[in-house]
Image (cartoon, rainbow, N blue to C red; front, side):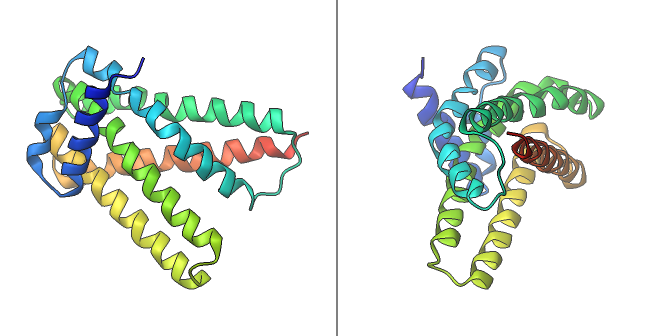
Length: 191
């Protein structure tokens, strides 16, 4: 069941991080309960994610039926939300920041919500033809750079680490997303 208070506080904290406000740390709990509740962000994000995938799938050669695509996308969505937190258990321990793991994942999960809505807005603009292709590509690169910076800022603040370590975490997340996208699209080849 969705908890409106958790959603409002989580999104407010995520937006404060977008303003580069280090004080946003206070909006994210460092408990197992806060950790589990932060996965409500996956439910909040789901409608925008579905629209984003529908737009993106239009450009992908598909030789699979709708049920297969639905199954693959559902599995990929769940894996995307679970794999990074799982990998981060080892990374946070390696960085000797295991005591900050819960609050980091809580903030990271809530920060995904505005990122997905931003990607949806940019993808909608690009696919609608509102912007010339070159302008849409430039906007996409700028948004990607801003999101990567945003993620790095969150990692720096929430784990109390230096920017190079935060950059490594951002790269890990980005690599997971790219790999998962490639694997997901490979399943569209079958019918």
